[in-house]
Structures are given as structure tokens and as C-alpha cells.
Image (cartoon, rainbow, N blue to C red; front, side, top):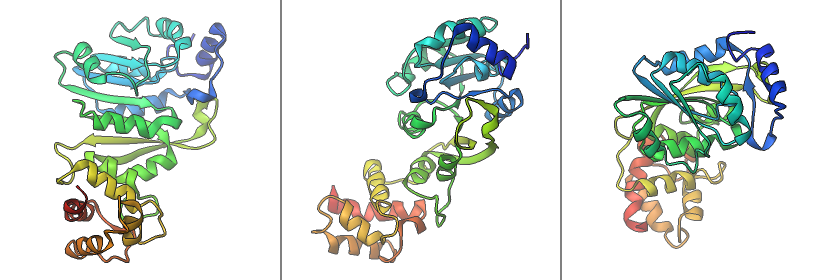
Length: 292
């Protein structure tokens, strides 16, 4: 039998042995290419003293590669049916632990304290279920976890939006939210042919390296995000139009919004996608006194 889990023959044998059927609702697509898994792990730059957190280990293909290159691996798996499979496939790796929990509901901070005591370098490395990619990434960043960063596979289209620069059609409130916390880069494109079952879209691997402090310093973080979301509510509308229609009592405060735009040296006729993070930070600070 093949040594690695991530080969078509071994994957098929494991799935058949356990009579496993894929659940579309959980976005299950298993990787069957060891080279690609190795390249994903390469981008995480793990050492023998690193801890790795995985989300959705499936049958353990990526978990196995992480276990070989790090001190300890903690995997969160929501699907109970996979637990007996993981118990078998990961039996050669005593440095792995699987928690049967939804990552979005889990106390990841507590799990890190319990499982990675004494480890200062922790990375999240995952092939994320596509239907919950954004909530998972945002939770990991907003919870201020002591991680170096995240290397994850996701839908190419979402990766394009995360790493987008101002002025491009993919740039939006998601780009800003993630680039506020991290340096975001797409490190590889993954064809759909290396998965079972094959997804309908190509995938990409992004690396998010956590910044020591946020990319911009603002008076109110929550208001800053409120302003960025409002600015992209209708992409074809101007920044003035969007802020007037989307911010609380914006229509009554149109004069103040105009004033804030003027003070921030931002043309009211510009669209949200043309503003940089710095411009959004200045603008949200100028607007904040009127809306707090």
C-alpha cells in the first residue's frame, strides 16, 4: 500500500473500507496529490519546534505532512464520521490530536494554551471548506490568537479578493478586513483535478502573515469596518452615495459626511474600490465623531 494518504489509490481504499460518502453540505473535497500538499506545507515554513492547527483534516492527507514537519498538530474536524478514519490514518503520528468540533464555535485560544504549551511558533494550515472560508479566516484573525499566520487553500475567486489591491475589481471590504490584520499573498494556484470529488472551481493557496500591529491605527476598529463595508455596499455608486445610504441616519448627516470627505481629501465622486487602507483609516476617523 502507498505510504502517503494523499494518493488516488490509497484515498479510494480508505473511503471504500469505511463506506464513506461525501457530504456536499460540508464542502468536502479531499486532496490526492502529495506534491501539492508538500508545497502547501513548504509555504507555512514550519520547523521541528512549530505547532500547526488544521481545520477540516478529512482523512488526514495534509495532517500527515504537517505531523512530519512540526512538533505538534491540532486538527478540528466537524464530521464525526471521519473520526474512526483519522484514528487509523494518523496512528503512526503520536504528535497529532483531532478535536471533533466546529472551528467557528470552538475556543481556539484555550485549545492553543492546552495543546501548544511552550511552543512560540504556531501556524494555521488548512484546506478550508469553501462555503465557510471567510467566517473561519475572520474568526482566527479577530480572536487575536497567538499565531504567526495562516496558509490555506480556498476558492481562487476568494483568494483573488483577499489579496486584491485598491483600484482592482476584486478589491473590496474583505480585502481590507484581512489586509488590516495581515500581509496577504497568493502563493499557488491548484487545479480542480487534484481533488476527489472534483470541485467546480479552481483553488488557490494564500499565505496570510500576521502584522505586529494593524496596518492602520484607527479611533474605532468596529466603526472603521462599518465604513469600509458601507463604502462597497453598491460598487457602482460613489463613496458619498454609499455612506449616505448605508451609515446609520446617513441621509440626515449628509453634510457631515461631505465635510469628513473634504477633510480627508477624498473626492465625494470616487468609488470605494479606489481608496487605500490609509484613506479609509483617515476617513473613518473624520466620520467617527459624527456617528459614535
